Image (cartoon, rainbow, N blue to C red; front, top):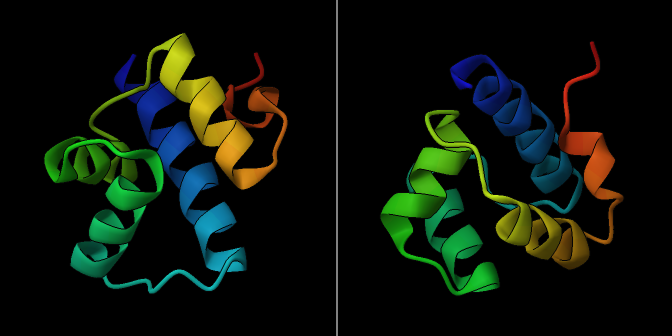
Length: 76
C-alpha cells in the first residue's frame, strides 16, 4: 500500500501545484488540512506519501480539487 500512497502523493502534489498552493511542505499541509477539515498530521502524511486515503476521503479530495478520483489510483 505504501507504493500506492507514494503515487497518490505525487499526483496530489501536482494538482496542488496547479492550484498555486505553496510548495513549502509545512504551509501546504496546513492549507490542505483546512481545505478538507482534517488534522494537520493526516494532511502531512497524505502529502508525503506515508498514508493512502480511504475511499471516503479520496472522494472528498477529488471533489475539492474537481478531479475524477481515478486520477489518484495507480494503473496496473
